[in-house]
Image (tube, rainbow, N blue to C red; front, side, top):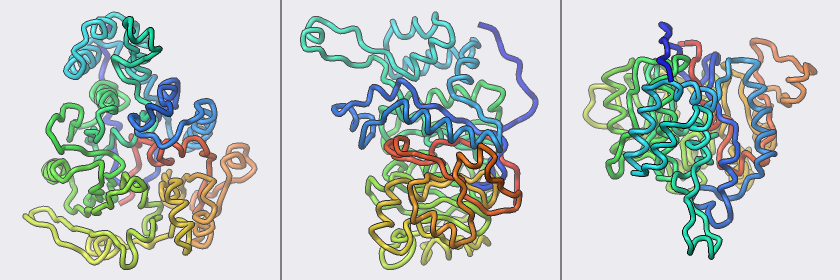
Amino acid sequence: MTARLSYKKMPVNINSEIGPLRSVLVHEPGPELLAVTPDTREDYLYDDIIDVETAQTEHRRLVAVLERFAEVHYVRDLLAESVATVEARHLIIREAMDMLQSAPIAKDLNDLPPEDVVCVLIEGREEVPGPLARTLNETGFALPPVPNLFFTRDTAMGLGKHVMIGSMRYGTRWTEELIMKTLFAHHPLLANEGILYDGSIERRVNYTLEGGDVHPLRPDLLMIGFSERSSPAAIDELVSLVFKSTAIRNIIVVVMPKENTAIHLDMIFTQIDREQCVIHAPHFIGAERLSILHWSKGDSTMREMPNVFAALEECGMRMDPIICGGKNRIMQEREQWASGCNFFAVRPGLALSYARNQETLRQMESAGYRIVASSSFLEGQERIDDDERAVITVEGSELVRGGGGPRCMSCPIEREDIW
């Protein structure tokens, strides 16, 4: 193993959800998904079982679109390059052993070639079965695989030139925290001004925070979802850190419902243009709307706001909603469940979405967006002008079974500043 030379440039720069994308981090779903079975799916936070080959095909199409706009980096590649260095390898071993206390795995992580270390960390390591396990044909993992890793946004998030590493709500995802910390702490292509919140070392009860709940809207404005996955104590700590170390001056907190259809804020709200967002209407409009809190730097308390749009207006950001699923409540619920709110913007007014949510896409058309199939875009049959509003649709019949959409699967590293 050799030491790596550092780059002078700090690539990480995320001050919005919609600035032109310049680089992004993804992970193609792989053999780690084979660990999800009817018996284990709940342990791995799945509602269904994904066909791996189909999911890979769908993910490759998503990445092919991203590559037309930005430099795409893969977790596997950067992790292999990182653990080729002494410092990153020692970090992996030290922090993995804090959780595992397994001498054989520690030895493997120290001795194996970088590519094999990556396989162990991502695909897991099965336990050596004893006599009873062999007799009963039972298997288990000494180091669990990470079938949720392709949702790269969950465990890492750029905040300005800093980074937040998530502290995941469920222990089955702890290896993801370690992987992302290793990348952002050691790989020069992810260089930054420091890990602002390090969830990989968080051991306190009720300190959880996930990237799907963290939305940087402007250099001075951050929206956070208080969901089942992100706790008040961790949000309080993140806010104190961003007030101290970044340009953020205003926080809008969305008090999320405790339901498995809305595990993160980005499952019910995503911004797609300077003044437009896609929402799950029952949570933001009408009698069922969620509580919205506004917290300004210097204030000791939060103020409750009438709705999210009033809170945004107070911060100088007008936002017009496009309704996921349209006006019909049944379609709203069906398409929200299928990640119909989970758009990913590659520039203001140009976003990626699943093709399956047809009523949502009709609402986008009514709002002035042209709907372009990824196949037509990639094959050059349809061109999107630089100032045109459009949605590029990707297939996602298998990917959506994991419980997320294009935003969940895309961790931006660098966006151009637009504010």
